[in-house]
Image (cartoon, rainbow, N blue to C red; front, side, top):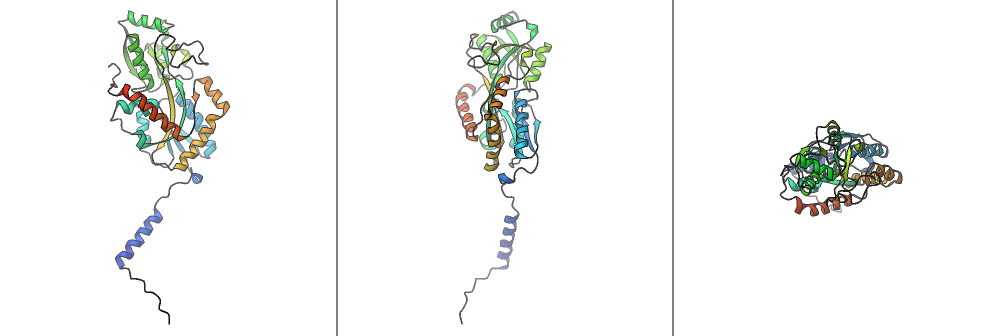
Length: 329
């Protein structure tokens, strides 16, 4: 008779442990597969207030994603702290693809350099999805000033103890830094005022509460006087507005917009989102429509956004390190 090998006996305790481990593994949540995701609405969190370019672009992308993904994509406005509030909230969200954040170069690159206690690490806490596009910052003046050029604006400031109130979209944003540099080169004192977005800046300029503002260009900004644009050359949609350089100031400033997810979101989901948005941004009709509104569409892979952040961080770190968030300093 053939003898069968005798399997070693397991102790009762070992048996219990093995069963428990198997149960835990079976119940553990599995990474979401791109083909199964999403099964419920997705939130697109916008880090600056309504009415500006970021808001408009976000709603356009939300509409496209709703169709592409088969689930509603809801835009949630979450401004504050120059974009910091929204990013902190997104960084703490579950990495399941149901929360995305739309922000800009200021809070994603500048602010962490200037404030080590900002509350997030872009490289560790966020996953890049797509670089949407960029738009130039513009120097706006209140109609009450009666000025038509930067030269006239500086002359006005000289008559008023060399001071101007200069509004910007928040500490550490491109508008903030552009305003600081303009005041420095023009040898004027700036009373810097932080806002949550460009729309309330324009409203207060029209109302005469402030003298100037330097937000990223947005729809309807031509309701006030535009004295300079922060591009290298004049923009086709603003043919009568000179650049800072044309007006004698070595200033180039534009604000790029990007979309991130919380770190840890499965790669297939990131690529699914990227593919849908990139196709939209590369469409000639989309590019033409946004160009007329002042946005240069970019798109590309998540790595393009990652590399842009790395390059901008390297370029700006020597300039911003040690710079105070107190705009008056």
